[in-house]
Image 1 (cartoon, rainbow, N blue to C red):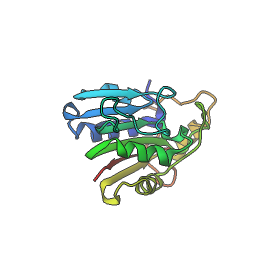
Image 2 (cartoon, one colour):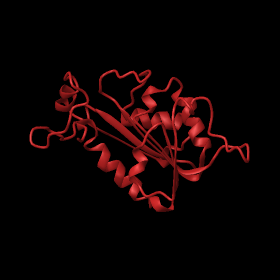
Image 3 (cartoon, rainbow, N blue to C red):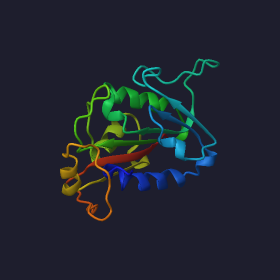
Length: 187
């Protein structure tokens, strides 16, 4: 099953990450498993509630300093955080110089508290958010995708809707984003 909400974001994001040559990267993921599909040099998962990115960067027990990564992933997590600005600043502390943060979020989807649902960003909003968290504007790529057909499907009782390539219109309408994603680099 492919979620209709991720039918464009998924392949576009995979290409962004593949272009980074994953086999060379020390990667971490915040509360998800999206990164399992890549052949990273190393890959760690930090899951809530055992680890709360809002509480601070992950500290290396040997050095007492934040662990450093080439890439940190957050797929469909940031909308659930009570303190997304603080969490993003903690992610930035965990990136090596030149390290990247990939984040994907919904825009027009039903409320889905797991355990809470707090925020929505368009591509521009996501870029502005990342700038406010300390990333440089020219080192951020942000994207969005969606249309009214997908928005209407998101109102169906069974959610998320499954993509049907025969009946689903996936042409982008910039005035009706369903999801947004971005890659920000630490300078």
